[in-house]
Length: 264
Figure 1 (cartoon, rainbow, N blue to C red):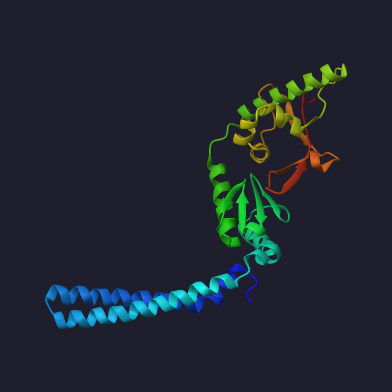
Figure 2: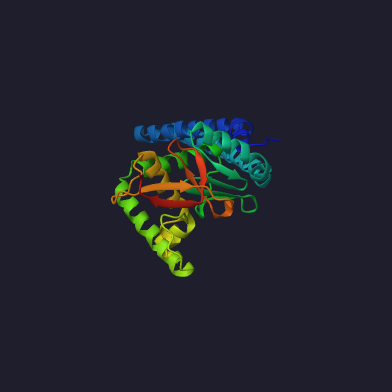
C-alpha cells in the first residue's frame, strides 16, 4: 500500500498510465485508417478499420474502468494526516522556502496553508487548493512569492505609513495612561489593527501580507523613515502576540513589538 501520493501516482499506477496511453495511441491510429479508407473510397478497408476501432474502444473502456477502480484504494485522509507533513517540508526546502509549521497549519509568508484531511483538501489563505502533490504545492507557493517580490514596493512610503500608525498608537497609549512615553515599543498587532480598522481592509490586506511587507523592508536594508526615525522590531514574551516575519535572509523570526526612534 502506497504511503504517499507521489508513490501511488508514479509507482502503483504507472502500469495503468502506460496501458491507457497505449490504448489511446492505438485508437488514434485506427481513426487515421478510418479516414484514409474513406478518402480513398475503399469500403472493405473502411469496414475493417471500423471493426478494429470498435475492438480498441471496448479494450480502452476496460482499461479505463480498471484504472478508475484503483483510485479509491488510496487513503487520501490518512495520507494527509500522517504522510503529507514531511514530504511537504522537504518540497519547501527544495524550493528554498522557509516555513513555520505546526501541523496542520503552515506559514510560508505571505501565505497560510492549512491541511484538512477530513475534507481531503488543502487551503491557501482560506482558498481551496486541490493539487495535493507536495512538490506541486511548493512550486505554486514559490511562484506566488516570486511574483510578489517582483512587484514594485515603495519602501519609504511603507515606512512613512508605518511611522504614522506608530504615532497614532502612541497617542492612544498616552491618552489611556496619561503618561507621555517617548519612543516606546508598541505591539505589532496593534499597528496592524490601526492600518486595517475595518473587516474588509483586513481581508484585502491580511496580517501575513503585512508581515511580508515588513520582510521586504528588512531585506531592503532601508530602516529609516522619511522623517529620519529608525525602525526597530523586537521580540515579545507572549508568542501569541507575535507575527512571523522573515528576516533579511528569509528566515522566519517572531517579532511582537515595533518602535521608531531617533539615533544619537
